[in-house]
Amino acid sequence: MPPLAEVIAHRGASGDAPENTLAAFDLALAQGADALELDVRPAADGSLVTVHDPTLARTTGDERAVEALTAAELRRLDHPAGPTTLDAVLARDGATTRYFIDLKDPAPAWEHRVLDAVERHDAAERVTLQSFDAGALIRLHAAAPTLAYSTVYRRADSVEIDLDAVPRFATAMAPWHPHVDADLVARARARGLAVRPWSVDDAAEAERLLALGVSGLFTNLPRVVVPAARRASRRCASDLIQ
Image 1: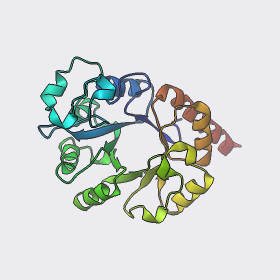
Image 2: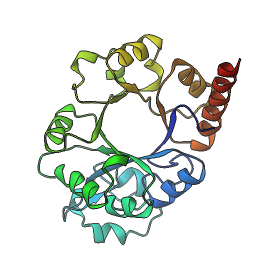
Image 3: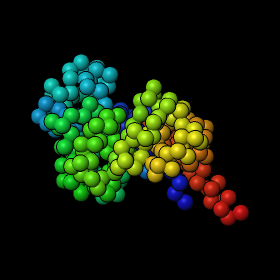
């Protein structure tokens, strides 16, 4: 029986492989993740590349800014954490993988290219667009109202979330996991919002959140959280039988 809540690989299986790389995405699927989360931002030539930070310093030791390099230059990086392109990810994983695409530092000058890529790969039914920037989601929704959208909250912003401020078109929210409790889940459900906390890498914490009825868990360690989700699913099935 599949888990009741999706296990979403945060930047792929980024606890075991270089984040936002094809290797991390492949490993996440092999470990049983239900969906992939990836970060995108533009390169110098306008290509969308899978990088979280504005520079490559943390992931590769290269101090250059992502926006100063073309996709071809990024491909030539001799480093296992060298980023790939959004097109490469959407083309690689077939017609069944679900994606959560997180726009980093979005701006009107480039964010519409995400919509173009989703359309190009016929992935609209399998994609949720998300960002810390609600304004970007509003702009994207105006251009593509049938896509799924989720707000994401930084650690400090997750302490006290004003659900009335969540755009009415959003289908989900992603707060930092320590601040997710039964009250937040109940209030979100009343608003029709799925709750998918990030980033949960501990089995006990995953089980706490699953017991609250969250709809998904972002994790850097699918190998840890997938078994917890399956245990929760089996317990729920047993309770229903009884």
